[in-house]
Amino acid sequence: MSQLLTSLSLDKNIKTKAEKKAKEISMTLSGVMRILLNDFAEGKIRIGTIIQDKDENGLSLSEQRELHQALKDIASGESLSGPYSSAREFLNSLKKDENTSTPPLRKKISKTK
Image 1 (cartoon, rainbow, N blue to C red):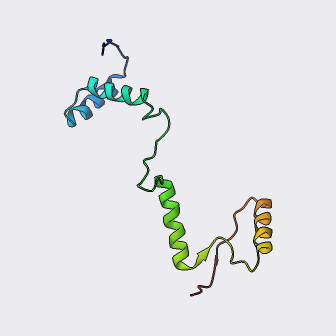
Image 2: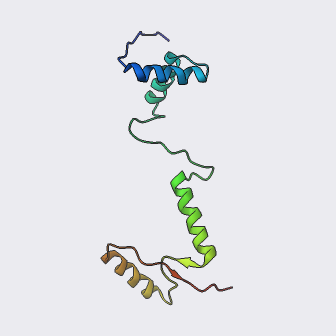
Image 3: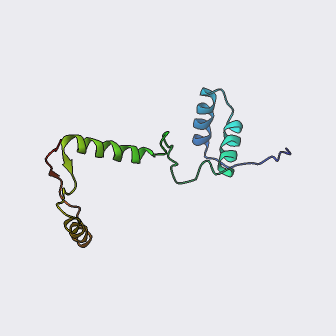
């Protein structure tokens, strides 16, 4: 692999802080920059966005939180809507929800065993 020398203009305070952080993990600032540029080039990082890690089920952190909340709601007997006595009632509730800008209210549902 051929190497090319590249210079970079940085704010003095940023450079000092970055060098200090790099030293804490036994690296040089150049080493950190090489890793960052390699990862950026390979699409492992994006500038201006956060790439969320996924769990073993392929769920992002926010999806894990949503699932956890949904499971909590189920355990406590809460639901966003329903239960429904027919498919028509369910479809009508969807049409109502589409016509309103606010989400339906949570309500207690009875647990059946």
